[in-house]
Image (tube, rainbow, N blue to C red):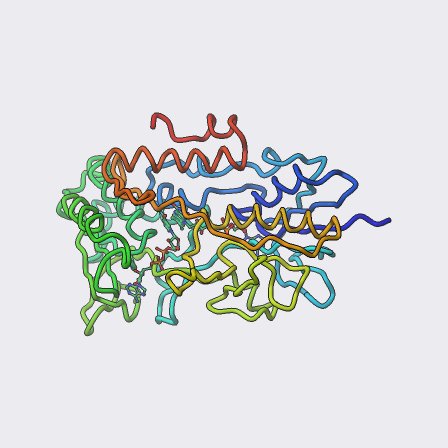
Length: 400
Ligand code: FAD
Ligand code: NAD
């Protein structure tokens, strides 16, 4: 009898955890497992604000996929997924194709630009390891330019972060913490550096605990960050951003963090989607496609209590991977009684750079050193889950 073919697309939090869990659950005769990813490494998307701001070496945030897998059980293919051909039960890759009996789509997200003109041309939008390296190099170049370029632009050392969601806040936290060191290294007066966070909503971190938001904003302001709240960005140009009623902020560096949408492969493949995210069935399968599971940032699940979608996070992606692995195991055993996904919210902690963070864990608000400790614990736990204690010791955040 032919073994069932399981294909997992994407090796981030969702895909990597699905591959590791399935390889432990299933025997060699149960199914073949293939994991396909654009690069031969898995990266910690949740750490990317650090290499982007230059406070962490990019290599620290990634790990070879082959070192995380039991390669006797999981076949790894380094390639880019172009499209899912649902009717033919295959995925098209840049350099080939793969047949599947069960597919797990875990391709992550891409930047949401809301069609704002100039974003793709003039802003940094890629929250990937390559994208983070590009931002880091650009920041250093701008500091180096300051004393060397004769016709330097007004915005040479003006940094605009678009969006005061968690990504924007974590990035500016790192950059503002690092700015004094960069000024010293490049002989730049501190007052030459301007850092803006521009947010369309009436508050930074909309929906988050107001006391913690205030703590975070005060801290960032004390490091020189300027907030422009209730100020939507209307356009991005070669010289900066147009905000609110037409005011221009001249800036050579614009880092885009106004939210995410599901990977473009979802829409290209004809899945019904909302901002690139598929509203999945309770068992995480795509409606009408019993052989396709969609997890992580490509999936949309409604939080019934709040009557809106759960935010796409690594936490939920990791939990979805476990449910998916269980459900695939059940299908292989011939059961059609699949488990409904239930999100177990373990809290939210956001770093603010250095030894500062804010968060809510259970019903407890935490900030400062306690929250920073907790954030490092969460980061280490993610390594432990996907790669065991050796990975956590090698790449983890110590001292806590
Ligand atoms: P990802 O982890 O992004 O993985 C997607 C994978 O697919 C990647 O390996 C990518 O290379 C690969 N891929 C993409 N396209 C293709 C293709 N066409 N072909 C092949 N491979 C492809 N969430 C939290 O819970 N806590 C946090 O503290 C937190 N911090 C964050 C900080 C930052 C700076 C950012 C940007 C996000 C943060 N998030 C956090 C959100 C979290 O990172 C995402 O929700 C999570 O990574 C989603 O997991 P995923 O598996 O869906 O996608
Ligand atoms: P987000 O959607 O959470 O925040 C985007 C922000 O941009 C919003 O506040 C929005 O009002 C603002 N915005 C939208 N359009 C704008 C415009 N034209 N001008 C100015 N501001 C505009 O997106 P994100 O911060 O990229 O986060 C993506 C996901 O990753 C979320 O689910 C988030 O919870 C998660 N995440 C979690 C953490 C953490 O837990 N520590 C860290 C980073 C990201």
